[in-house]
Image (cartoon, rainbow, N blue to C red; front, side, top):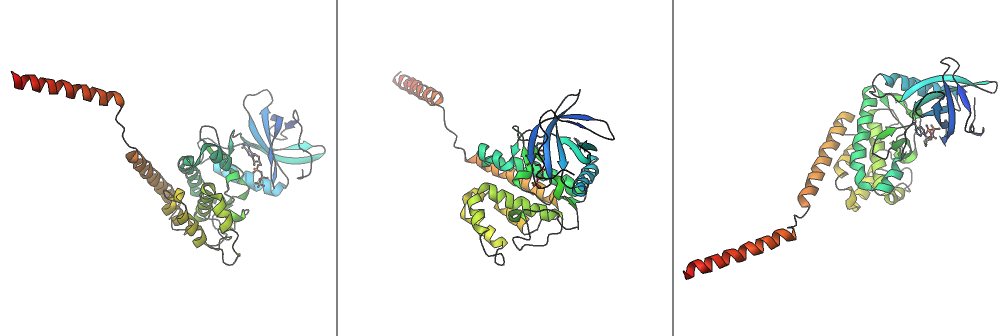
Length: 306
Ligand SMILES: Nc1ncnc2c1ncn2[C@@H]1O[C@H](COP(=O)(O)OP(=O)(O)OP(=O)(O)O)[C@@H](O)[C@H]1O
């Protein structure tokens, strides 16, 4: 199996599936993480571009493939294209091919486009999570690096390596977004585990400095009330605070309910916003009104004189 220190495949490398005989040509390395390397590839003789992941550990990659296979039926536009083995020198290496998400990770998107995008992106992300949860899986390692956003605001979860069946221990997590880290519950994979991570992720996107400060507490004193306090201090949280508090407390029955409440709250907030925009009278209308008033005054004067 390939390792994290093995050199990346250079552009032009051909990866041939042992069983399906598909051939993919590497264009470039998209990124590497703790579990594997991901390449941008195009099918030999075919059209389109895909992302191809080569894992460091065969078992870990296989469990990722199993989850993606199980989700294939639930998704209208499946993420997994195919999985196969190929020969790297004399070694057999497992890989899988997925949809290529052209975009940027969530935190970079929000930094570039503004926090007002959070309402819409949060909505789309909750939709993705509720499909995953309806299939009995928790995403686990929900964090901004694992959410890709396209230029048009299309949202996609990447890195299914942390996905676990409901009721099993979460396989991978990142401190800030982990319910256990905030002494707020177990590391058992369930819908509310992901909703908790989602809430902390929103907090970090809206005020990263405050989240960093809150996380500096002693591990035994760190708690959800630190997160609630920081939200009270910054008005940027106002439209989201009630929802975020509910997710932090694990009070949503499931992610469908969380999704519906998010929808309701963002519609209400946008309606309030529209109502608050002062309606300015255009200058031409003021002028026209002035002329009509003058004409009317003359008409009344002439009428009274006659
Ligand atoms: N479908 C995709 N489309 C575009 N880029 C992708 C895709 N999947 C992964 N990437 C890129 O490759 C990088 C590594 O992928 P991934 O997160 O799956 O690897 P990992 O080893 O599981 O990472 P981690 O250390 O976060 O667990 C990502 O950060 C992202 O930049």
